Image (cartoon, rainbow, N blue to C red; front, side, top):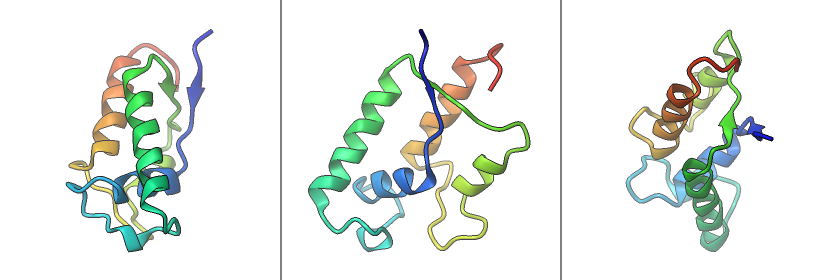
Length: 97
């Protein structure tokens, strides 16, 4: 059975706060422990390598939330997590998501 998931924006922000190449700074998240932030990033990397699918709504509301149109923490297409999502979407062509 193929497992799909929706990634909460806070998960992505915490993961990117552990990624030194991201514009998201560690103090932008509610997770103070750098070890926990790194664990979230490591989980995201494993998710990226897996065959698990990501669920995105047809109206693009989840994508808009990821991009932070109404938040201070804006994820960009250059952030690893956004590249992951775009790649998962491409790999699912033909799947309903």
